[in-house]
Length: 157
Image (cartoon, rainbow, N blue to C red; front, side, top):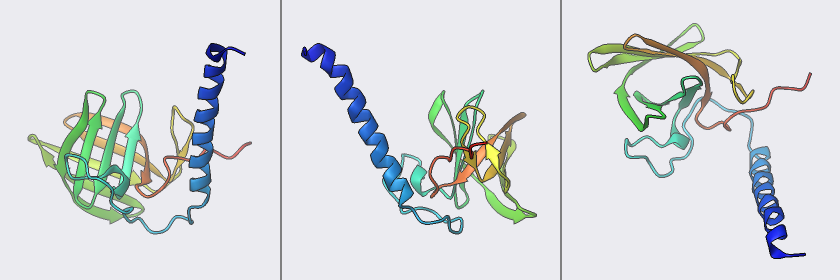
């Protein structure tokens, strides 16, 4: 067998091995605990490490994310991957966690509703439904605790 025909098979095997190792590490995780930050890794330029965020909200079409850590939010889009840092007040009432404040002269609010949410593209299930409003724009999506895996596939029917 020639090397040129063997190379794609080796690449596929390496990728599958990496996925299996990641799944094995996730399988060893404990049940979800209270909403606390994961151990801090290397912080990004804005000082908020995505792995240490208390919550991560995301949405599709348009793509967006908000990482919440304490009273600091980082709102990111594909056009602004570093994101914009927002200082917020955090309050919880009736199963809804709200982060609110004002930036660039406009009020903003991130709401995390504690109810199951299925990502519209991946199909992954998350523990929270999210809504982010700022400057006349309202974005909807799902959210997870920062210490949780990215998502879980829904149970088979």
